[in-house]
Amino acid sequence: QLQVVESGGGLVQAGGSLRLSCVASGRGFDSYAMGWFRQAPFRQAPGKEREFVAAINWSGRSTYYADSVKGRFTISRDNAKNSVALQMNSLKPEDTAVYYCRSVSVEGTWGHFGLYDYDTWGQGTSVTVSS
Image 1 (tube, helix red, strand yellow):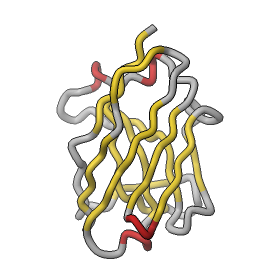
Image 2 (cartoon, one colour):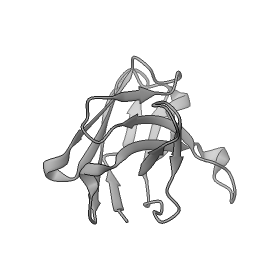
Image 3 (cartoon, helix red, strand yellow):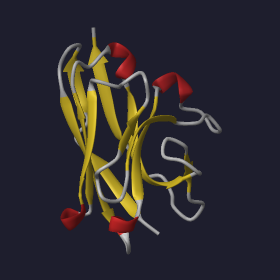
Image 4 (tube, one colour):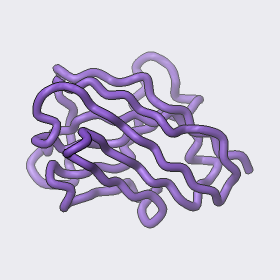
């Protein structure tokens, strides 16, 4: 089981950049694929699913992005530091959300992800993009 702490959010103007960080504690970080998710303000109600943003495999050699962020966001990891980062460039107002990281399972083929029941969500980090 991994516990995560996200940081790096803030207020930025449209077109700007932010770099989010996620530090994990617990055993086996370097054996897990990790993902970033987000939940926009209007979706912050019980039962509202978080939107998938990006994922990276255990070694860092494979990545996957939602179409809405492809070409603008880059996910990376440093297994020596038990950390995952999300570099966000060319930010848009619609990127405004609370961002979360979490370990993900690969459901069949790369690009199809699930969540482990034994992990939980962190507190997230808030990103606000002004127009």
